[in-house]
Image 1 (tube, helix red, strand yellow):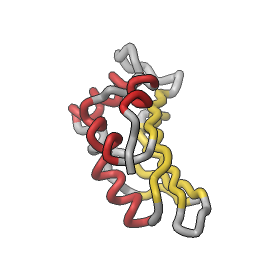
Image 2 (cartoon, helix red, strand yellow):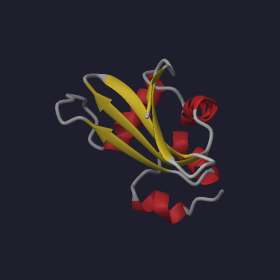
Image 3 (cartoon, one colour):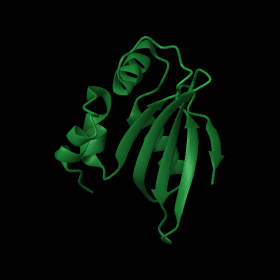
Image 4 (spheres, helix red, strand yellow):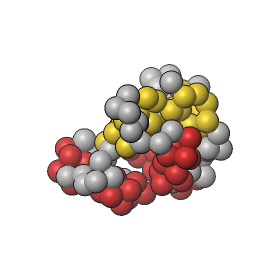
Length: 116
C-alpha cells in the first residue's frame, strides 16, 4: 500500500498529525467543517490540527485501528467532518469481497456510530 505524496500536497492536507499514516496507506483524507461551525481557524486542516492538539479528536492511526477491527478491508477514503460541534471520521473501506462500505466513528471517543 503506497500513497503518492503529491496527492496529499495537492489536497492541501500536509497536517503533520496524519501525514505518516497517509503515506503508509492508500487512503485519501478529506476534512470538512460545517458552515455553521463558528471556529476561529481559517483552513479546514488547521481546524483538525487544533482539534488533535486540544484532545477533541484522536490520532488518525487510533481511528483506523478501530475501523479495521470492525470492518476489515482496505481503507480507500477518510473524511473528518465536524457538524453540530462533534467531530466524526467517515471511513470508506473496500472489503475483501469487493464491496465498498462505510464506517462512522466518533473522533473523540472512538465509538462506532454506524456501519453501512
